[in-house]
Length: 273
Image (cartoon, rainbow, N blue to C red; front, top):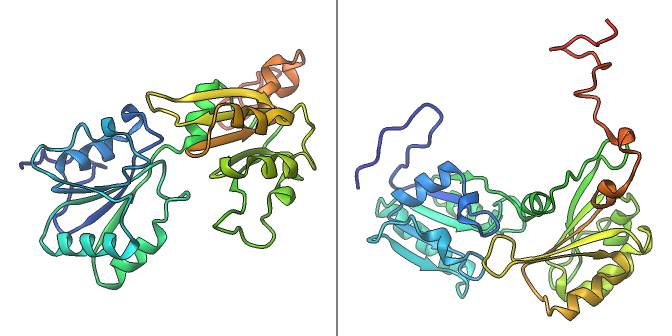
């Protein structure tokens, strides 16, 4: 396939290279331009079919080899990547969300690097960003909350010592909880050790998919709402005082200094001179 010449800053797909690409949460229009370009150029696409909806693959060439990986082991996936790279194919390893978060990509990168296969990583939109956009909110509201925590509760994969959910909840930051729907009652109990029961929670199921669900409730009801809708996987929880900011009357308190007329900065003098 002929590939159009690159503009400055554009990626130029190279045969024999593995491109680890973030597919975003599910909406094909949230793919980056680099992801679109690579998918259109790819000879081989290995994708996490349990986490990526078919429309994300709509720009893949009809003659490309498309390999689902949900049922494969790490060793099987790496063997495919190495074999196709040594055959000088352009390879896309497509992961949901962003590859830097809960994507099990670290061990894949190490394995292919150890045998000399070049790779590049292309970031994608993560579910927490799609959730904030859907909710039409900012998760770092001045004067209210300025810290964002991305975490999960211990399950079959344990979190390291010092990262247990109750300890992180003590910060009362905007907290985005991944991979925890099966343990939601336990998660709620740990969060309630520090967040007030009336703290708003957004329960976001399969954001960007055709069957997405978003339920905004109180922390006290987080487990009950999850169980009522039978949400057991691909669910993100956003726990944040910022979700209630639009319901408050003292909005001036949470106004950023960036665009305040009295705030002098590099590109603008203050109105008071």
